[in-house]
Length: 224
Image (cartoon, rainbow, N blue to C red; front, side, top):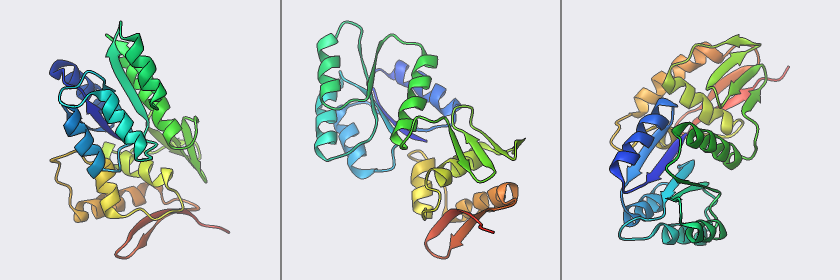
């Protein structure tokens, strides 16, 4: 899961970064509206935008308006002051998916993040099933035929992306975009190593990660 936080309160942003990274997300942070706009224009692999409305340089509502004007369906969770009812209404009318008034409990925000990202993936179900493989997006736990698979955080991230696009090709560049934060150096060779480790753990029975040389990977079910 890749999340962009647009929040100018550094203390609040640091708390969100720690909490969401601990929950397994790759999280990037910008501190003003112009930086948020630039990030959204150059990176299409975010799964969620957490947007403070009171941003400097470019107001959060304008960031949201431009995002929706481009036809983006990216889930947006807006953060507002507790007494800013008018701004919350405007944000929802402009296409925000949910809002939270400050101050808020991190645990509730994490639950809303999970719900919004599931919705953005096309459904409200907390689990993804692929043959005998079952992945719990809330608990970030994978099982095959009911047996727990021990996966590292990076392997879980790879599995999540491949499951969300099961049957479709996912390039190495797309994997890097979805899994890595700004400034995090992950090479194509490193992706190959992670895929190799993941294969050894999940390719049991009718499941495989097919390699399309020079293009990427595809999670498949083997018939028969």
